Structures are given as structure tokens and as C-alpha cells.
Amino acid sequence: SCRTVEPLEYYRRFLKENCRPDGRELGEFRTTTVNVGSISTADGSALVKLGNTTVICGVKAEFAAPPTDAPDTGYVVPNVDLPPLCSSRFRSGPPGEEAQVASQFIADVIENSQIIQKEDLCISPGKLVWVLYCDLICLDYDGNILDACTFALLAALKNVQLPEVTINEETALAEVNLKKKSYLNVRTHPVATSFAVFDDTLLIVDPTGEEEHLATGTLTIVMDEEGKLCCLHKPGGSGLTGAKLQDCMSRAVTRHKEVKKLMDEVINSMKPK
Amino acid sequence: MEEEMHTDAKIRAETGTGSSPRGPGCSLRHFACEQNLLSRPDGSASFLQGDTSVLAGVYGPAEVKVSKEIFNKATLEVILRPKIGLPGVAEKSRERLIRNTCEAVVLGTLHPRTSITVVLQVVSDAGSLLACCLNAACMALVDAGVPMRALFCGVTCALDSDGTLMLDPTSKQEKEARAVLTFALDSVERKLLMSSTKGLYSDAELQQCLAAAQAASQHVFRFYRESLQRRYSKS
Image 1 (cartoon, rainbow over the protein chains, first blue to last red):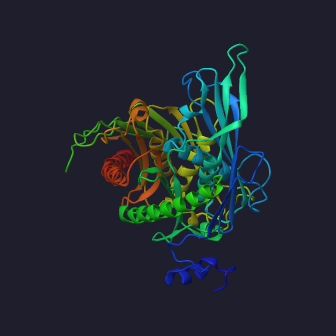
Image 2 (image 1 turned 120 degrees about the vertical axis):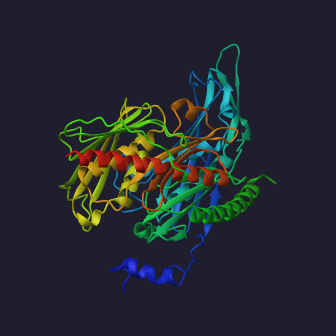
Image 3 (image 1 turned 135 degrees about the vertical axis):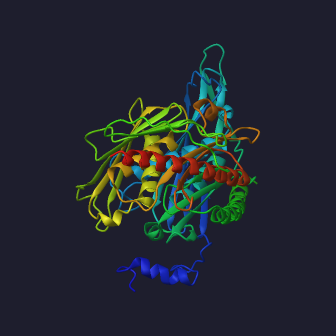
């Protein structure tokens, strides 16, 4: 059967042989590449490519007054943008539902995993704190946007260098020393693994855009290095049994190791010799 | 394990009412449901869990805008209004969760090129809000007569710092908990339809919570069945 006329039948023929049209196995991820520090005007940046899906994350640090109920905490503000550039399904204008859901997802991951201790962003309690604006822009949408965004955010935060700030007692103004910069203390490394459910039974890892469209459900697991789960995001779709969830967990653990290795390689290559 | 459910039958003309106290074995709060209380929507339901209350209205199958129509099934839309303030990004995220859960159970292929709209209004929030929204949505869909292949229910679990599990937590318990997990389970095989979690937890704790939620869902489904039986037996 033809790919454009009957896409589901076309896919089923491959799934019966336990593989997919692009040659991957059911549990195989697409080639992941990451590039940090590409945006020189941002305090930290990273570009992640998962096959064709491309997401770039830029982090800008600015000053702000801390909230009155937590005077020694800073802010981390994520925003995911899916512009019309990345796919024909998005129109220009206010963020659509998919972008809002992705932004909320990233905000939840930051909050749940405690990737940055908000107290580390405090300069002067009650007066001045850092706010990190994390902008994630999708340049090419080919499925699995959540995994790419999480990875891009993690890589960009590891790349962020904040200058030293001292408060001048006489003038009560902040003095920024751009020559002395230090890296952020990234405490945990949350890694997202997404699955698509086909025909209520089959689980495939890292779905492409076409696979997401044909799937009957999706599942995203965010895990940190100790095997703790920061997020189990399953927005409806076919039901899953506990046993199937277990299989997904073990795949997520392996993926975490793969991603961590890639991250470490990149970070080490960036450090000055 | 058989728990006795003492049910008060408050008979009111044209409305189905049901309420149940906590059974001795499960730790869910008192829940109550009222159906067909709004005159305009095709189906409506109000679901109370302890002090958390959500009002749901369903319109459908109705006419759909050409831009939103799907040729072979019904277009489902969920609108969630918070108690105060304008709906924000968090509401959009919850709407997507509820919509995808409903899409998994509603037989949309029986009504192609139509729209089914579920409107949820938060009346009071005292913990386990998402689960209450799911229950209200399910009861409203049943009241509207929308064909579904299974019922679904929402159950919330909270894990506190020493690992004790609490079902159906109050707002205070949710704030103090290390992790809060909300699951939507279907009535046929208790499979996991939707999950939304907050906080850090381990894999073993997840399986534990899922098992507890599956056991608790039995009570919710029994309550659905009884309240519907009571409603249709007197008419």
C-alpha cells in the first residue's frame, strides 16, 4: 500500500517486521547531535538535533527583584516557541496549544527536577536576584519536540556563565564584573525519553512527525541520573499496563546514559585547555 | 475485600443524585455527584470530592467549524476555566490532558464532522483538582449520551518525604508532599490512560502508586454505577 494513500497500513507492514520505514528498530533513537555556545550574545546556548528535529535554546540572565514570599530565590523562566518556520501546521500569532503545552512541560521539568537550586541565583537577599530567561525555538519539527527541548535546555544551562555581581554599599548599585564569570551549578541532569503507542499495543521510541500523527497515544518519561522520575507525561491516548510502563522505564535508563555521555563529551571539549 | 457502601438516596425530580461516605478500607474523601443540573448543555454534571468541586457541561455532537472538522471522527474540545483569574498556560496544559483522555474513550467515529465540547468550571479547589475535573467530565459525557467505549476516572496519589502514600490528598497534603501523581484509568481493564506528575519519585514508588490508584478506581466506578442506577430506576 502507498505511503501517502494509506499511511497507517504502510507503517503496519514495517512494524510487523519490528522495524520502521527509516530503518530504525523500535527502541532506537535517531542520531543526536549537540552544539553549545553558538549564540555569542546569549549567556548560554545550545543547539540540539534529533534526526531532523532541531531545537535551539538561548539563555539570557537579567536582574530582578525577588518575590516577597521567597526573598532569596531567583527565577528560571522557560518559553517554547514553535514558529511557522518549523512546520506548516503552525501559524504566526500568539502561541498555539502545542507551544503552550511544551512550555508548561519544560517549566514542570525545571521545577520537579530541581535542575538549578533557585537559591544559587540570589545575589542579595530581598533586593537583587538573577532571572534566567530560557527561550527554546524549534527550527525544524519532525516529532519528539519534548525530548529535544529538554536536552537543549540542559545543555544550554550547563553552558551558562554568570558574571560576578557585587552590591556597592555606598551607592547601593550593582557592579557587574564581566571579566570574572563562573558556570552555573547544574545539580541534576534530567533526560526525557518519548514513546508513541501504536494500535494500543506497540511502543516505539523517538517518534518522527509522521509517526506521532499516526500514533494512538504518546508517553514521555523524564529521568535523572539516580533513576528518579521527574515527570511521567502521558496526555491521554491508549491505555497502558504496568508491565509496559516498566519496559519504558528501562529504555529511559539506557537513554539517560547515552545522553549523559554525549553531554560530558561536549562540555569537556568546551572547557579551556 | 468487600466494603460496605452506605448510600443516601436523596431523590430529586429530574436530577440524578448520588453520594457516598468513605469506605473503611479506602482513603478517598467523601464524593458526591449531581447530573443534569444545567438546562442549556446537552449533558452536565457536578462532581464533589471532599471540598473540591467541579462543574462540567457537554455540548454535542454539534456543528463544527470547517477549519476544525475531521472527516472521519468527532472533534473534541475541552475548555477549563479556573475559579479566579484568566485561563493561562497551565489550564491549556490540563485541557490537553483531559481532551486526550476523552478522545481515547469517546467513540468519535460514530459522529464524523461534528464537535463535542466539554466545558469545566472550577467551583472550589481543595486538592486533587485534575482528578475531580476528569470525574466531572466523564459524568457529564454520560449524561449527554455521548457514546463511549469505557468510562474513566481520575485518582490522585501523594507521596510524602518518608514514602507514605496518600490517596486523594487535600491542598495542604499536596503542598507538603514530595510528589503528587494524578492518573486517569479506564473502567474495562484499569489501564493507564493519562498520567501527570509533579515532584521526584522512584520507579518502584510509581508502580506502588499505580497499584493503589487502580484499587481506588474500583470505588469510583462502583459509585458511578450506583449513582446512574439510582437515577434511572425512578424514572
